[in-house]
Length: 350
Image (tube, rainbow, N blue to C red; front, top):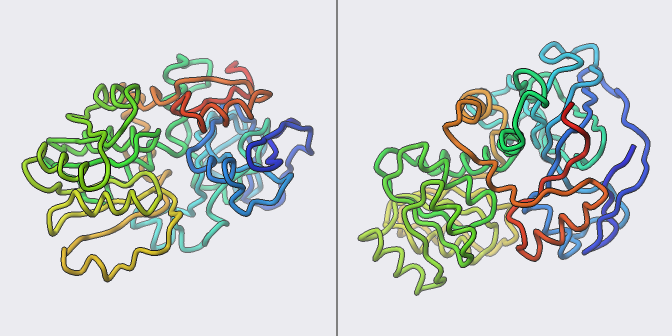
């Protein structure tokens, strides 16, 4: 089968590799229909990120058809159309039952996260609960709906996780930091949860326009102290909640700066900093929560229905589509901000 391979920083290739097989009783083999590139994938693409040359690529979001199941799988069967999330929660441990399947107690660390989804087939381990069934078959849906369903593998639940962790509620004033796909979905999530004002911090007109169409009430292009002052002017004071969707030190500093004392941060950007001691927030009474998104919980309880009912349209974040053979271009264009998020066609919808 064909699969994307990380060669080195700035180069992803496609080559023939062995098709995966069932290795454990709770494995599921899935034929991939659509995959995509995540903003977090760009860290290794741009910088190497200590990733081994010529290794399995990072891609971890997909839609597919179940082809084969292990003997313990009872929740899906061959032929089912599924959202293939980047997480593998068990659905039974304390963390999963509390709605934090992104950091399952039983499947700790990297065992709970996916990679290698930019391939014709994947082996999805711990598959009995985490996969999300979609009614019907891919061919039953428009391309626009397919795009929205694909966001449910990661970016829409991740944006929702930021809003949930920050306890965004009715009437809240919210600031979203990061205008990529996750930030765009965080805007949608804040609106879903009843925020009265949603300010997106963005320097790019196309992303500003998208966020405004999704429910943002204002945009701020400035950064640092100037940006903080502009946000406070728009909101008439500090924000109730800040949703940090980037993963850098300056983004966290921005989040802390826009809040009133007693405000709340939901952070979902994969951290690439380690110099922000928690004690530094003591004088502000700031609440900070976040981490790996609860993809399966949110999809099953809230987001799949919202997409199928047409209440939200997160699929608009896919602004360019590529064949699997052009996967390097899909990465390059995201890296150069020529597209907000790249969708990858792996096989036909029929």
